[in-house]
Amino acid sequence: MPLVQSAYSPPWWLPGHHLPTLWPSFFRPRPDIPLIRERVELEDGDFLDLSWCGGAGRPIVLLLHGLEGSLHSHYAKPLLKLLSESGYLACMLHFRGCSGEPNRLPRSYHSGDSAELQTIIEYIENSRQQTVFGMIGFSLGGNVLLKWLGEQGAEAAVERAMAVSVPFLLNEAADRLNQGFSRLYQRHLLNSLKEKYREKFSRIPSPLQVDLNQIRTFRQFDEQITAPLHGFSGADDYYRRCSSRQFLPAIRTPTLILHDRHDPFMWASTPPEENELPPEVTLELPNGGGHGGFAYGVTPSVTRYWTDKRLLEWLNSARG
Image (tube, rainbow, N blue to C red):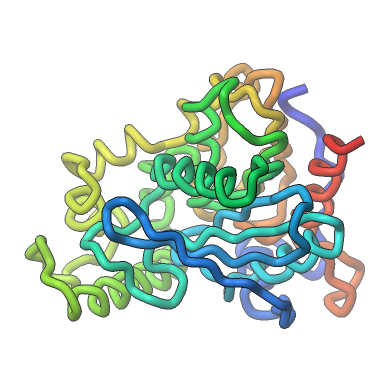
C-alpha cells in the first residue's frame, strides 16, 4: 500500500515543524562508538571515505547523509550504533569533502550523484564479497538514494531502502528555503558550503570566478557553483535532472519514505501523490516531525526517534 497512516505522534513539547527540526541537532547525544575508517580511491583520482561499525559477515546497511552532513550529524552515530547492536554491519558513506578532509578535485557532491553511489555499492560488493542489504538516506542522501533506485529499477542490488525528509523537487526546496524562518537553515548550510569552498580552493586552482559574498541563496549557489562544477547548464537544469520525484514510478525495491507533511525545507505539495508511487514504495506522511527530526517521548528526558524504530522494523521485515 503506497500511502500508509503513520502511527507517529509528535510530542507535546515539540510543537510545530521548526522545533522538531532543531531539537536533535542541539540535544541528541552522539555516542562514542568504535569505527573503522576506509578510504576508497576513485578512478578520477579523488577519494571517498567510509566509516564502518559492526561485525564482518553481517547484513550490510549503508547510510547516506544529508547536505553538509558528517559523522557529527545527529542521526549518524546513533544509527550506526543501533544497527551494529541489532545484528547489522553499518557503513556510512561520506560524500566528497564531507569526511573532514577536502577532496582533491574541483568537483564536489550534489543531490543527484547516483553514479557515485553505484561506484560505492560495487566497491562494497567486490571488497566484502556480499551485496548491500539495506540503505537509508537523509535529505540530500535520500534524494540520491531514490534517484538511484529508480534508475536501477529491478536491477537495484539492495533488499530494503528507506528515505527520510527527501527534497523530492529540488527547485521547490530551493525556493522554500528562501522563505520565512527557513532562511535560517539556508544561511547555516550556505555558510558551511562557502567555507568548504574556500578551504578546498586555497589548495587547488578554482575553475570558477565567483564572489561568495554575493551568494545568498541556494539557487544562486547552485547556478554559480554546483551546476558548472558538475556538468549542468545551470541551476534549473540541475534541479530538473536530479529531482528524485520523477524516478519514483520506476522503483522496484521495497522502499519506505518518511516525511513530515509540512517539512520546513519544502512545500506541503512537494511530496509525491499516491498515484505516482509503485506498489514497492510506502509513503509515511505524518503531520509533524520536522526535517529529519521525528523525536517522540512523554518528556525530553526520555526522547526516542521514530526514524530508528521504523528503520529496524523495515529491515527486519525482510529477514523473517
